[in-house]
Length: 381
Image 1 (tube, one colour):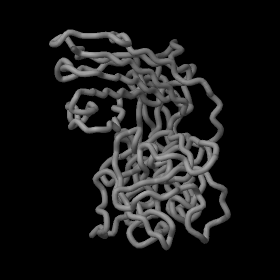
Image 2 (cartoon, rainbow, N blue to C red; image 1 turned 90 degrees about the horizontal axis):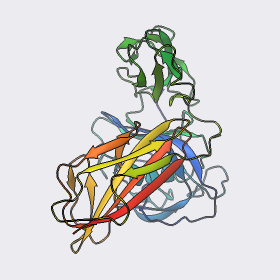
Image 3 (cartoon, helix red, strand yellow; image 1 turned 180 degrees about the vertical axis):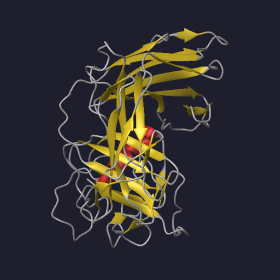
Image 4 (tube, rainbow, N blue to C red; image 1 turned 120 degrees about the vertical axis):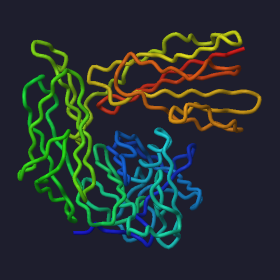
């Protein structure tokens, strides 16, 4: 069964400006957001969001708080699927665009990352579809309220592909087989049925959606299920330990298990190493290695760094994808670069930092969605 499609060019979701103010006094919530593009997962992880004014290059600025438009159930102002997308884009560095329709009182999401073109239908019939807790959205992305623990999925598809859901144990012993399961859903109620023939780490699921995996070495195994003509699954992490050790005793539930109350309220502890706050480096002796540490008893979801440079020409930020600083601009909306989940961490720049005033920021998110930041400012003379 095809997913519900809203509007003429895509699902009614939104984009927002980096510094857009909130439009209502509401309580922020943390949702589990996943964005599946045509060839890869654009984003997957927790996002804390609230009501706000949303701005897109093609749509302008409009408030987005769950009360937009008409015809939807009565809502009080608060966070929406669209505000979650906006917050994720600025934190993780991907782009999107969409036009605003005054009749709907909402935005069309027409492009995210490299998928989609604003104002043009996809020749293969694909569009950006949105589901909340496995159910296709019946209203625009600014007309729906979300709550803490909700699962929000945005996917590039033609409306005919089922979605995969992966579940796995939190930990496994090396050399011992463990069972994982893949279900699929595609109807208007998010009904789960076994997914036969899905691929997980090279193993195919049986008629009940089960597959047996065995891991030869300790460490975290990051898994996603894929199947032809289906949307790839959520991620699930398995902590693999050697016999006789206690390395996984405090392992958090796998990332495939989403939703529910967030019990851990303690954020990760952070530390930037090797560069002291206010330190000055002589020309030609600027640092090249960035390093730090992060720790959380419940496990880390992701560690990031952000490096900005300010000179008389303006502000630049370092892009790990291109291994360069961006072009200098009057204002600086820097993006965080992913480091993974292992700490202590280090990152080797392609060359020593030239003259300028720098700010290095470390950010970490734990498996209960708590976040911490730490930064140092230094100069290269």
